[in-house]
Image (cartoon, rainbow, N blue to C red; front, side, top):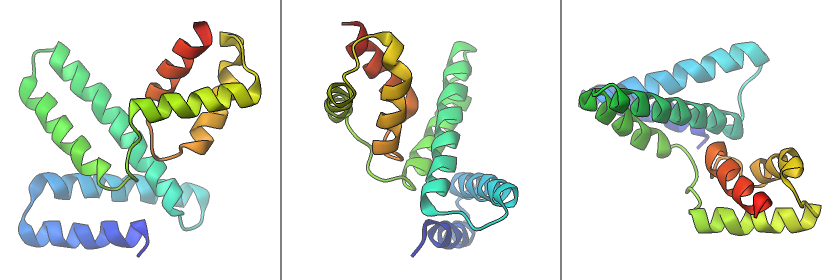
Amino acid sequence: MSLNQRIAEDLKQAMKAKDGIRLSCLRMVKSSSKNLQVEKKRELTDEEIQAVVSSLIRKGKEAAKEFRNGNREDLSLKEEKEIEIFYEYLPQQLTPEKIEETVRQIISELSAESPKDMGNVMKAAMARMAGQVQGKEVNEIAKKLLTS
């Protein structure tokens, strides 16, 4: 079953169960995916749908942080609950240790030595770990390794 079909099935189940937050999340994924599909003028691959979900997770994390800064704990918790639902549609996420190990391998393969090589390292790392990590995590780890 493709990711698109799984999302459609889960959307039906959420409607039947009257699960408001899950329904809202799946509609966001469906809508964002449809927009990208129209833009590309073809059906999306599972990887492209995962990229859409990753984008929604990143936006949700930013929103939760901003709500916390604005003393809106209720809205922050809602965003975090949505993020948990979005993660169900991505492959198993890598641990920080595994990310660091992979970035170290990439740095040695590319013979990267300084922060100037960050672009090449990030490009290779995101290609290798697509869907399994958030770019911000990889960026922080790569920056730490390249400056030390």
